[in-house]
Length: 309
Image 1 (tube, rainbow, N blue to C red):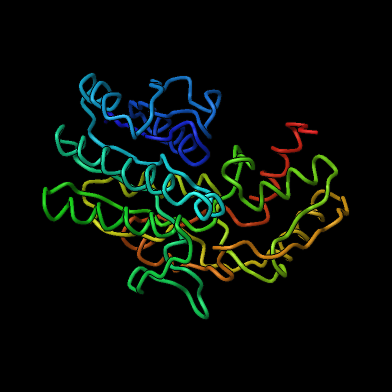
Image 2 (cartoon, helix red, strand yellow):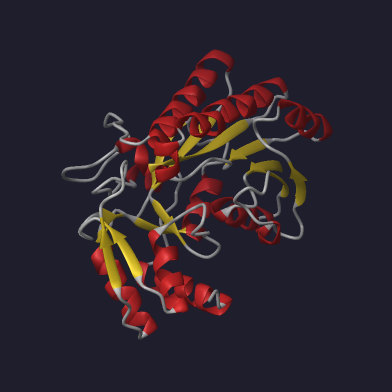
């Protein structure tokens, strides 16, 4: 199939592009390179530089190629940035998405797949969050992701554009950029590789559901199938890990004892997050293959090899 990946030079997007090309698909990447990197783009992918907020750039992109499927990975991804700049966050994550949805409808795209986030659920007191519970985002980033899901659902009802929303848990792995797509695994790995202190925001007992990026990419590709019903799918491991436990595991792998600085929790951050992936396992015929320990080892080795001192 002929596939478009917006944000395909970014962390998750570039791994998705790799997965799609390895499966034999023709892939076009559309990315403004604000947080993505050109060197992350697979050599067999076609690259078009542009911004999803630029309707003329999207006009040229869709006029030049007929796309069967669109993966929408382009986004503003930082919770802390969204709290300081809610207007820009919404500009990218809501208005930019609407531009992409409009072009998909005009050009008869068969399906759109959206990158969403566990942030839509807000903080969880107990249990696993499944797709049926009400969303209660506590950051503007989470709010824009929830709004994007609602737009996709309404475009489906109004215009018949099939969709799948992938609500990713805390994705980690190679290529995660600490400067723009801050993930705690990436930040800790870089700190250990460079011999600097780790910083934990809050008491460290906050928890996340960590899923390896290649598993997330595989789930996204599985959702592309025309037989997969339109709807929302949690992409997760169902395993809860605290930040304090994570830093101990990474220091054990690295055989390095790092200083740890505890600072105040950041506004908008969730304290507890762990997702039920049962719907994705059953409907997408997918399950995560990478256990946390080998995934962390692979990720740390990647950042160690980069020697970013």
